Length: 219
Image 1 (spheres, one colour):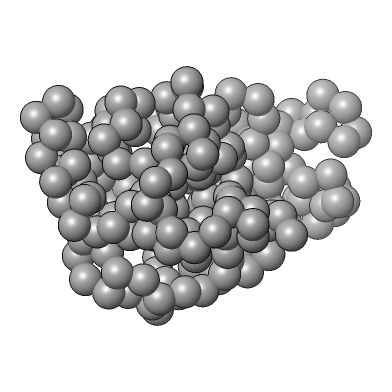
Image 2 (cartoon, rainbow, N blue to C red):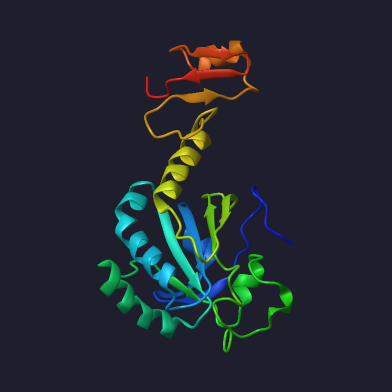
């Protein structure tokens, strides 16, 4: 069964390049990005893993932990890390989960139950659906799921923007409009009547439609 937004992210234990973890315990009170890869030593994923390493300071500012997953053993990940550093100037500075028995890929609905129980002999094309980004909150609920094809590199600047929106909307009774960036106006939730909104947003707001009220959350 496919995972849904708002569902508790499945917990698991696994070996990683930084030791064995129990997933929920490892997340703790942080936010988390789990992003997956169909195979080690694949070209697009090589660029993604290095770019995430370079973005790590930005994620740390936001209390976000990063963890990767690839359908290969941990020892293979360690060899791949050298290539990633050579190509991108940064090796993964976050744990990479080994999933040689496909257990976690199936647990997260990225591979069917019929996929077998070993990564050995499987090609990237066999695992092409293991290209997801999951954003998980401190409450362990899934906040975002995006699946990418193997041919398209992921935009992790966009994921960073989404984290900013998720963290804002978790704290304030607002949503963020199209292409929103930090510092821009947000939208008061349509479920909040004006009388309540006056207490929440004494700075006032701009009404475009009765259901569309822009507010400066930085005021």
